[in-house]
Image 1 (cartoon, helix red, strand yellow):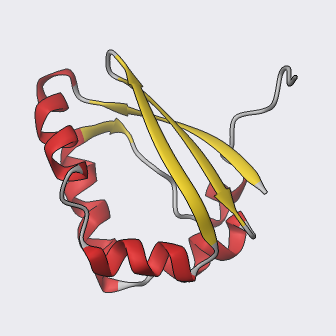
Image 2 (tube, helix red, strand yellow):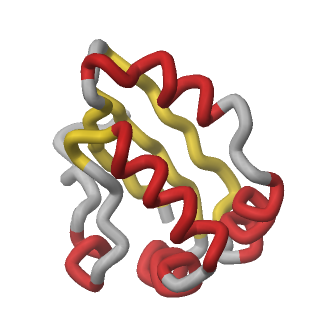
Length: 103
């Protein structure tokens, strides 16, 4: 399945956000792949971040990562940098952007 997400980086933290993503912990990327993600791309337009996630099951992905210590640490770091964060709650499974048009 494919999920599009929207988050927002704080204007004064863009460089830190991008630097953090150049050094995502290998333990976290391995866990993301093990949870069924084949691809995760993030684009930035100003402060707006758009994620495209290809995964087997987005709800399962959230459930598997939610209590994982490396992800908890990563999300704590992202919370410092973001105005709109990635939602790992049960409601987060419904947080994907709706498809408006597709070719």
